[in-house]
Image (spheres, rainbow over the protein chains, first blue to last red):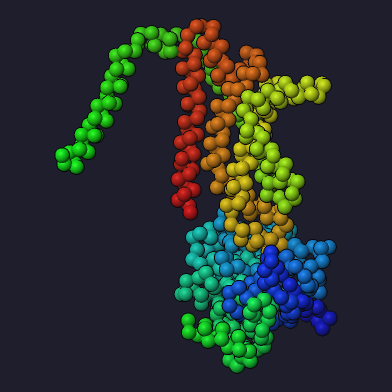
Length: 251
Length: 262
């Protein structure tokens, strides 16, 4: 998309709170993402980073606060959230490909049913995106015939088919065997190089260090530290960040 | 006594009991009478082709209409039971509990006879087919609704989330992503339900039937009374089995395939 100085930023979150029953998992988050920025969210499990990501496309209903996607307030009940979601690609830890559909139909079904593209156009875009993740030869397979790494690359292609303005990744490599992580990270790195706006919840510190423009460390439902990877990962100011990074290094 | 000898003895005595019971039955039974009362070839021959062209045909048509009506209603009930709107849930739960608790014969009779009494002049159209299929469909819907609900809940939540994250509405996600997967899971139990319905169409006798609208059981029973012989029932039983056995075989095949696909 064409970004002018007047274009509102992709993600603006103000004072976001989220409760699961009595438990407050997000305790007042302020979080902005600029166009073309790659932001990595890190932190211990239960820190609220996945919940924050899932609030961005309203898979989780925020309890309080505002979330602006390209200037549109998705916490406003009048907003057509389905329309906003087509601009936000999402990649899940468990891939969540549709097992009853071939790869081609996985990639084309939402194009046809949501964007109203005809079959020919949808298939053309699907082929293009599949080529981008290097899996053209798997076009007629069912997902169960693919390795985890291939499934996740198809899932990325499926999200790209909607021509999103930004992509959310929820621990995209956590369910993968170690030898399959690299191929998924490579695809994500290329996306970042192409200028895609990305928010990535990850435990891959190497990826965060090389690819991220900003790293955010979350703990206990708040943002503890926010800055360029060189600062947050190599010279963290906060004691909690230091402790978390030490624990990960020992692993 | 050695352990193995003891086990052998137990085995042999179990065989001996089996042979004894079968032998005694064979010796004591009056085979002439049985063959004449249940396997009379002339009476059996007279039943054809009507037993197939009328009775079996009616049984199958009644079953299909009851199944289709029941299935559509069951789908609505299942979605109501999963709804976030409380009154819908309560209606679905109440419906399911009531019609699973009532004998099918009572429900069919209620539809056919009580509705015209309660609402003057209102009659379910379609005669035996209409009244029976709706009555039996109402019962079947209660059972199938639970099956469909379980099938929908067996589809991982991530499927709905992935579909919604692509911008699909709840309805589109349900139609194109969740339900097709749920139906794969529930085809075997739904086929079982179909077999039960085939047998339950025998209850349509309460509706009073003409020669044209008799289903298998009524057809066999009427002939049995007329001929004072059990052969018609034997023939009818064999026709039932010819319909139901292939279906139960199909179910076990499907179940194995589903199990293998996981």
